[in-house]
Amino acid sequence: MQKRYEENTSLGNWVAKQREEYKKYRKGGKGAMTEERIAKLEKVGFTWSLVAKRTPCLSWDGRYVSFFGARTDNQSSTHTCIIL
Image (cartoon, rainbow, N blue to C red; front, side):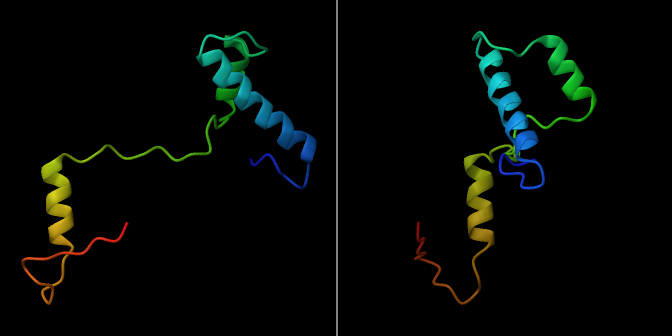
């Protein structure tokens, strides 16, 4: 649920606050979050982060194979341009 949940903005604000309190709790700070609240929220499937979990990083060799495997046959075998 987004903070700007237009159907019920107070609920969206509450959800955002729970996430903030959870972050604070995880860092050892004082706040309203408790183990009991965490357990209750997790029991109903509360999502602590809206950011998707990243896939594990490939090794250098894995990235090399991915990069060169993506090249097309008409590209020069000696030059590759990467735009960042």
